[in-house]
Amino acid sequence: MTSPGRSQRSARAATAIVFAAHGAVTGNFAGRIPSIASHVGVGVGHLGVALLMPGVGAMLAMPFSGRLVHRYSFRPLVGVTVGLWCAALVLPGLAGSFIGLCLVLVPYGAFAGVADNVMNAHAVRVEALYGHSIMSSIHGFWSVGLLAGSGVAALCAHRGIAPLDQFAVVAVVLIFVTGMSSSRLLGQPGYPKADPLVTAGSAGDSEAPPLFALPSRPILLIGLIGLCAVFGEQAGTDWSAVFLRNELHGSVSLAAVAVTAFSATMALMRLAGDTVVRRVGATAVVRCAGVCATAGALTVAVSPSLAVSLVGFGLLGGGVAVVVPLVFAAAGRIGPHPGRSIAGVAGISYGAGLAAPGVIGGVASVSSLRVSFGLVAALSAVVALGAGVLRPHALPRRQRPRIAT
Image (cartoon, rainbow, N blue to C red; front, side):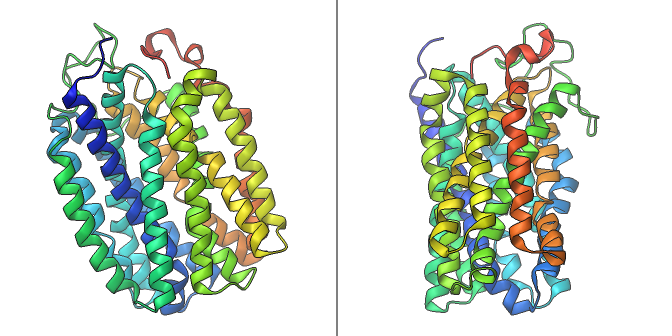
C-alpha cells in the first residue's frame, strides 16, 4: 500500500482532535460527579442508578448509527454527531433532583453512543488508508481529552465554580473545535460499494445494513472482550473520584485528581500502543493489558491510602487503554458492512458496559466500593484470558481482516 497522502494525514489529525473533544466532554462530567451528586442529594446507590441512564440512552440510539454511517458522508456526520454530544454536556448541570438527573442522562448517553460509533467508523477507514495500526494512538487523543477535561474539572471544583457554568463554557469551546476540525475529515460516504475494508465481491456491499440484527459469533466474542474493558474504563472514569471522596475521605478537588491519574496513564499507553502492537501483535498486547488492569483494580480494592489508590487507578487506566481501540479495529474489518459490525460490537461493549456505573453503585450500596472494584478486577482478568478472540484466525475465513493490526 502506498504511503498516505497529505489529505489522509490531515484526516488523521482531524480525527485525533475530534476524539480529544469527545474525551474532554467525558472528563469534564466525570470530574464533577461528586459535586453533582451532592447538589441533587444522592448517595452511591441512587448515583449508580442515575449513572446507568447514559447506558440506556446509548443502547436505544446505537442501533441507528450503522445505518447513518452507511448513508451519509463522514465529514458532516462526524461534525454534527460529535457537536451534539459536546452540547449535551450542559444537561447534567441542569439537574436539580435525582429524577431530573436520570432524565437528562438518557439523551446525554444517546448522543455519546452515536457520536462514538460514527467517529470510530471514520477512524477505521483512516487506518485502512495507512495499512497498519493507528487506532490506539487515535484513541490516545480521546484519553488526552479526558485528561484535559478532568483537569479543568479539578480546577473548577477547587475554585468553587458551579458545574453548569463550567459545562456551558466548555461546551461552546468544544463545539467550535469540533466544527473546525470536521472540515478536514474524509468526505466520501460512509461505506460505499468499493470499500477497502471489505473483501472484494462480498455479497450485499451496496445494500444498506438492516436497522436491527442479531450479532454474529465473531462480533459477539469481540464485543464481550470490549464489554469487560469498557466496564473497567467506566469504573475508573465515573467512580474514581467518588471512591477517593467516600472511601478515603479526600476533598472534592483531590477526588477529581483520581480521574486525572486514570486518564493520564490511559493516554500514555494509547499513544504508544500502535508501536507495541506492530511489534508483538494485538493478542499479546491485550493479554498483558488485562493483567495490568486486574492488578490496578485489585490495588484500588485494598488501598489503605490516597497515594496507593492513585497508583491503582493509574494501573487500571494503563491496562484498559489499548483494549477498546483494538476491539474497534477488529470489528471494523468484519464484512460485508463494517459500519454495522462496529455498531454491533459497540452495542455490546458500550451498551452493556455503560451499565457498569449502575452495577458498581448497586454492589457498593449493599457492600462497599472496594467490593465493586473487586468485580472490576474479575472482569479485567476475563480480558487477559479471552484475548485470543482478536486473532485473525479466530474468525471465519470470510470475515478475517485484510490488513494487519
